Image 1 (spheres, one colour):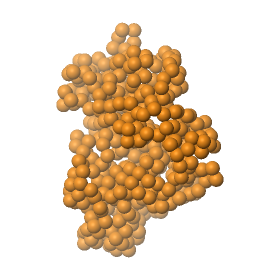
Image 2: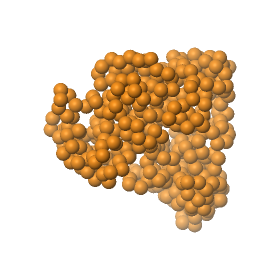
Image 3: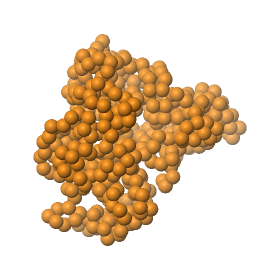
Image 4: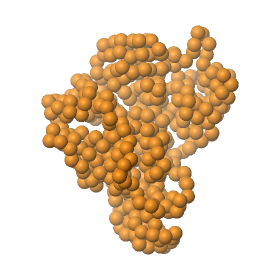
Amino acid sequence: MYAAPFSYHRAASLQEAVKLLQELGEEARVIAGGQSLIPLMKMRMARPAALIDINSIPGLGDINNSQGELRFGALVRHADLEHSAAGVTVPILHDCAAGIADVQVRNQGTIGGSLAEADPSGDWPTALLALDTSVVCVGPDGQRTVPLEEFIKDAYTTALAHDEILTEVRVSTPPKSSGGAHLAFKRSAPVYPTASASVQLMLADHHTCKDARIALGCVGLTAIRAKEAERALRGKPLDEKNIRTAVEAARAAADPQSDMRGSADYKRVLVGVLVKRAVGIATRRARGEIVEAGHEYAGR
Amino acid sequence: MRVRVNGEAREAEVEPRTLLVEFLREHLNLTGTHIGCDTTYCGACTVILNGRTVKSCTLFAPMADGGEITTVEGLAKDGALHPVQEAFAECHGLQCGYCTPGLLLSTLQLLKKHPKPTEAQIRKGIAGNTCRCTGYQNVFKSIRVAAAEMEKR
């Protein structure tokens, strides 16, 4: 399959990329890993007149950890994060990175591209919504930092202006006694999940939840914060009754569509199961246990 | 664009929308890299770009400009098959062979990271390569035999 013709521009610096976006206008798109954009262009669902390749811009692939904050350059590949120390410190990041599609796609696809694409089924928006995340956008007037909840506006729609580039993802390092999990169910490795759930908990003591953030993926036009479900756990014992209330609230917060991945009813049940499991794993991790978790698919 | 393919410098002028797999097949006549699904699913087009496996149907060729590429043609040396190729042949790790070039390169990448892969690591390592013939059992066997053989050398 051939994409519609376009002009190709390789930017050597951020300044050059922004300048190119201004010159080439609204028909130009930035390309990073290309793992979403290229398939869309091949199917002619996207027809940018120009592509600005940012892969050669130095520094955009760095991971930094300082002053209670993890900073991921927009070009950090899923595979980089999968094998990084950041994934050990914050396991929810590893769960997410290691389960996206397959080895080849993880080698190429980027965290910045995933957020800028804002696919409702993408894993990063869900996992990062369960953490305290903001993104840095650079445009002709300099840079601004936008909380992730305000950055993703709608399906495939973000707060980025046409001449702005997402350059960095910033995540506050969770406090002590915290743990999280990102779980997803998919039909096979290379496809988007049918549903996903991210839970990040902080414990007050062995059995009591001090704080909770819960996000759901693939069951709405954007990743969804399940705030009622969070309230069902915050400040309360992590017992069967409270977890059941949280799961029910998460199911109610989901707004899935029936499609080839499953019916709306099925996805609502699935997301409840994923939240329940994720709460269990997040709790065990917050207590210091090492637990393997992530994407489930047939043949795994 | 200028690239090194299997150690050789190659140069070509391409339209930007040329996919990397088409560049390899049509411009360089390296037809060992296959086009299967053409939708980032099956992995028949897998090549190694700058040390990492990628699906060459999901990269525009100019994005690889200046890069180092290994295709299936680069595995055998001086007429002798690579140990991974030998293992696939010995263990019947293929039937029709369409997916094999991609599986060979994914196996190389897997063994570089995990010289003695567990069952789970093998499953994860080749999850991006679809085979419609083998049922994967002989592929797993081939990968285990290749790992043992490469450790000996």
